[in-house]
Image (cartoon, rainbow, N blue to C red):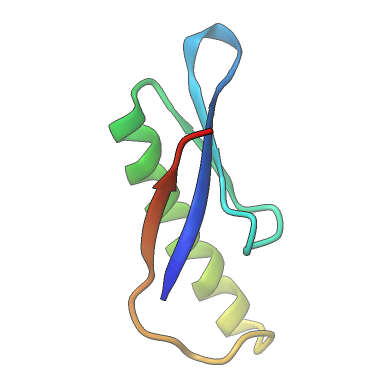
Length: 69
């Protein structure tokens, strides 16, 4: 599964990432590399929680694609 990630510069110099396909899935990091790694983790955890609640069907590995506005 490939997921689009929107990365923007937040306040206090941090980068903020959101995954539009996963409602409420967001993360942050000090660098672009860190925010993307954190977004991968956040997306994996989001999918795990939703699968546990049986709201999404089981899937394979999620691959996060970075999109910088």
